[in-house]
Amino acid sequence: MKKLFSLTLVLLIAASGVFAQGNAKKGNYVGKGGTPHEVIKGNNMTISYGRPYKKGRDIFGGLEAYGKVWRTGADEATEITFEKGCVFEGHQVSAGTYTLFTIPGVKEWTVILNKELNQWGAYGYDKVKDKNVMQEQVPVSHTDKVVEQFTITIKDDGILLAWDTTEIFIHTKF
Image 1 (tube, rainbow, N blue to C red):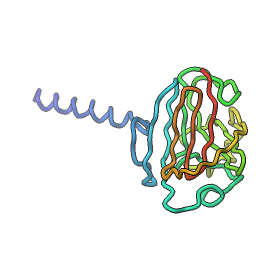
Image 2: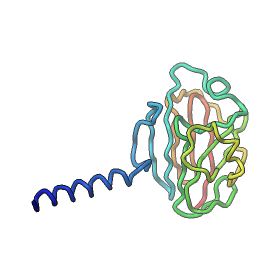
Image 3: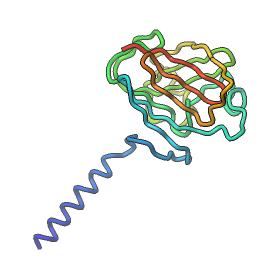
Image 4: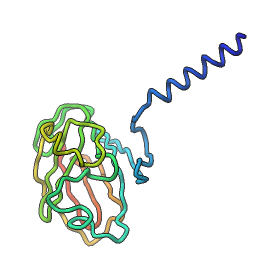
């Protein structure tokens, strides 16, 4: 009887740990849409984002239309967590987790931090845009090198977003 009780208790504790994790984004995983996701950490921030592939497609101005809000990745909208307050592209931002949206353009992109979390894509952005924490324009760089898979890289002074032959840099200061 004691063995049965002990076994039941162990199973209940183990199951509660699994359910408590919920949608926690820890480590790399495959998103609901089948796209690889990556969680990167560095310089007082953590970024969780989907990493779609180019697959021979025209990306910006094609797959991702100019002037339209983009989830900045694939599947779930990209989320960024700041461990402490920072200056994000010239705007003071408090510690916490935000959704990172962008609006691609030929010569510049709009970078947006939004308080609404757990968003699928950017489909509901118009309903939550009043929760924007900041919005700023950043210049675009075009490269000769093709980046096949969307990549975000944390640098000492900011964040580099690269896909296809397009790059943008978002300045951060802690």
